[in-house]
Length: 430
Ligand SMILES: Nc1ncnc2c1ncn2[C@@H]1O[C@H](COP(=O)(O)OP(=O)(O)OP(=O)(O)O)[C@@H](O)[C@H]1O
Image (cartoon, rainbow, N blue to C red; front, side):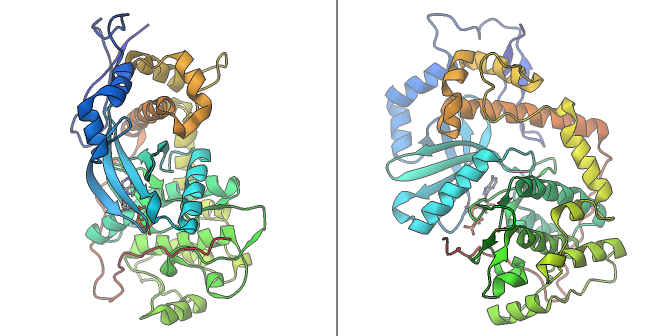
């Protein structure tokens, strides 16, 4: 059986730590030598330096914490490194003492949705660690950051590039909607990009599970992205609200301006309720027509997510992404180790081999499997599987993707509609 070794992350453009076949026998576990996993657990329990680092916030569980990525309403997000795999992760830290009841409810929804959603265009949740004072959400790190920052620094995207990114986000939202989940806070600040331009939807704090046409009551999300029905004191259906936000996002991606503006909330509300969108002359007719269908002020007449995917503007790009995602060569994400005795996918077989090198055996995976994100064994498994899939995707992209020039165009400042980062508003959660 081939042995895998871990190499420290090469600082390449892709920043992916690689697993390579290891010829040396020194990695073989022997009865006298602790495996990497055992050693890390031992350090966690007994090593003074590890314990001091944990006490002063430089370490949590098997992760070393480093610089801050940003701050949210209730959280701080830091970069972290997984001790065993050297994987870079994003760690969302929440102070229990500062969480209101609403924020606690949002957090528990965020965790349960992320636990249940497995899609390559959704930020993965690897592990959740709870201490006396804090929660730590260990997530996949998006190396190229927020789509928002990309649009602000580089300007609007050409339609071909926007199609590539947008089709991935639409597929993520379809995945949610098919599972009766509504995101409720889709915006450029919550779309992340990997170093290879893979788009990932994140921030599930406002998401909610709905039954088919169940009506919701509470205002959620960011006002510039909010559908008109949210400004009326009426109950609303969830899925169309996501499609409206996607329409705003698509307009922003292709123009670097927002479709609805106002000097204050009343002005913004008026503009959104009027629903009049002024598309620049350079916008193609097909794109204009899609945006209009997504920004239809009547939710029942608005496109649903399947109609968006099949629209003339997006059809080809989404079919490409679907083929790409489904192609078995890219393997399957398996958030939970397959139960003992069941057939394993190629990815899982390879992941298990790599884990064995670290000292995580099949027996341990069976024992920890049901604990999901509360287990550092399952977390290591998820990290390894995710990395294997990234490597496969990378190979696939090199082989199949048409080369893309940088097509960004600088933000249009002359129009006076240059957007600023929007804060999400708290829902009155019922
Ligand atoms: N998985 C990730 N990879 C890279 N950066 C991330 C990741 N998750 C969050 N960030 C960054 O961390 C910062 C804080 O994120 P967080 O989701 O806590 O708050 P926010 O979205 O800015 O605010 P809000 O509380 O309104 O949702 C953001 O700037 C975001 O870009």
